[in-house]
Image 1: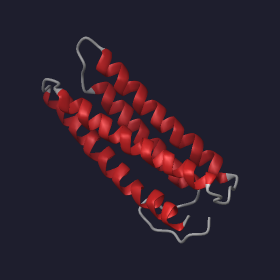
Image 2: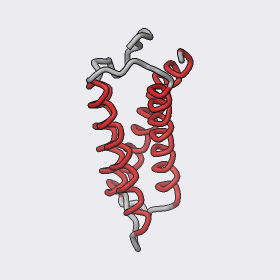
Image 3: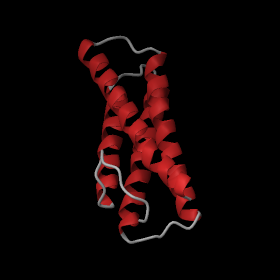
Image 4: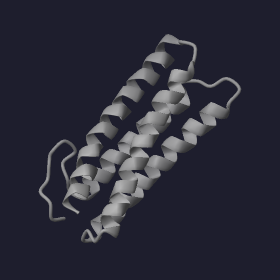
Length: 134
């Protein structure tokens, strides 16, 4: 269970980094009015995939017997909302006749805000490490 905890705790840095890369790329594309290419889909899907993996690790951690405490409800709900928002806006953008940068920017940016809120919901520091034990 300890390895699962450290994997879940450490993967957040990749999720946050990929989210920041995606937000920067989408904002730059929007500001410069660059034509949309497949990199928008690749970057958005990379963020969503890392976020999905993070959620899966969290669920596995709970299933492995990690102690459940009430603050985890807020954490869980915010993380699921983050994934839902990111997925929904990325899919809507991909299905549009002329995809753009705005919907992916809102989806990933909003998801990042929810992820940060979810981390803070359990009383953890966004960039700090915590000891195992709940």
